[in-house]
Image 1: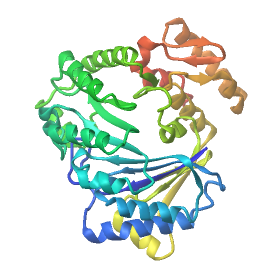
Image 2 (image 1 turned 60 degrees about the vertical axis):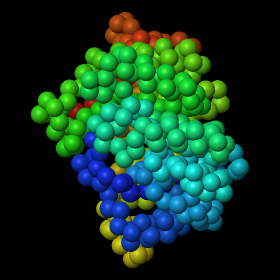
Image 3 (image 1 turned 180 degrees about the vertical axis):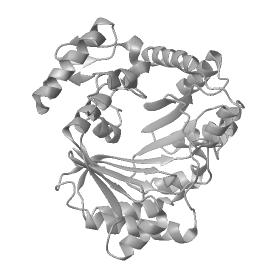
Length: 375
């Protein structure tokens, strides 16, 4: 199981999540696809010849690139990697890019899955978040997706927004139900340092309430259960047969190759990440090199990452997987596990340890309670 993640580093504007935005100079946009393919050629052995399960165009705004350019990139990747017709090939897209012409052109590509950043169906929310699209464009792109036969869709929504009531969030879920995508992701709003949102929260122009977000999460769980969505990962929900293959590979510790500025790669023992600066990335490849950094993961790192990713999954972790770690880490796990079981934060059954439904909003914190911290 292996996948490729292609980071397309272009955004239209800064938003509440970012303290900067990548350049959209035409020169960079024109040069980037060929540079990414040069990187693919240089790193074609990274995945050990494994057949690809997934290819994912993500990052900034991949839908700023025309579909014919995306297909040219896929054709180029086909010279160095193999995948079968069932491979999941996804593009992240903004609603304002998904007009009728874009859908028509997209039908002529190998892309078979769309991940659409709806974020909210409410105009005021989109303005507050600084999104480029509006509510009408959000709805229109979903209608066009249906019209042009794109039924493998994932939608993104955000809850826990400032001043968002339970009724507001329930209304968002009702809108989602009307479109009934096979997959959706729902994320609690997070306040990153040095962002527009962080400044507004600090100035008390906006108030973020974690208790309200926790209640929104409970409404989300109830909606999923009533609407036949499997809550298979903390922030991800799927109808039968529509789990995200690419993201699932991350959560299960599979190898993946990241291409493009700021893209990360993982081979089981090391993590690499490319320089984030577009100009430096392009210049390094022109010189036959690649500007990147590498981190060799310690056993402690791998143990903590296994806990974090596994306990975000509905199925939790398999205790048999502990055998890959040292006796000291296995003993640490068993010792720290007991109080969490006793207090109902974790459950154990059938060789698996998992977070019970009522505690899943706190998954990351519960996983952190099991971490082994280096002396």
